[in-house]
Each structure stands twice: as structure tokens, then as C-alpha cells.
Image (cartoon, rainbow, N blue to C red; front, side):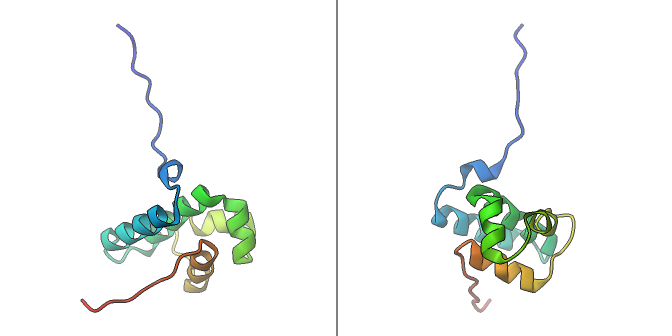
Length: 97
């Protein structure tokens, strides 16, 4: 019997357009339940899809610090989040519940 080979799923390989990236971030924000690290990880996925080096340059951060901030292992500062969102070409919106 032939063995099945699997690979790790990487969402960043499937985020091709700004609309897909925005929809992914929106869905992650809805699912996060206040978990800032989860949202940071989602931003990291989008940044990898766009190219981490370019996003780091556009955000005015080093690539290494951007990887750490968006690893999902910690909650980055809100100023970092805003810089990254801007560098990704996205915006934040608020709506009443």
C-alpha cells in the first residue's frame, strides 16, 4: 500500500489578493475572542503572503522584529499593529454591535 504524504497547510500560500487578505483578517478578528496574539498571527500570515521583507521595510521595522511581533507567541504593541496594517495596505474599521 502506498503511503500518503502530507504537508503542513500554510494559509499565506492562498492569500493572493488584497480582498482575500482583508477577508481573512476580518474572519480572524471575529474568531479571536479578544486574543491579540491570534490577530497578530493572522497579520503574520498576511505579511508572509505579501513578502515579510517588504512589509518590514514599509512598516519601518526590522524583518526579525516583525517575525517576532507577528509570531502569535506574544501580543505586539498597538503601534506595531497599526504600522503593519498600513504596510499591508489594509485599514481598520469599527461598527456598532
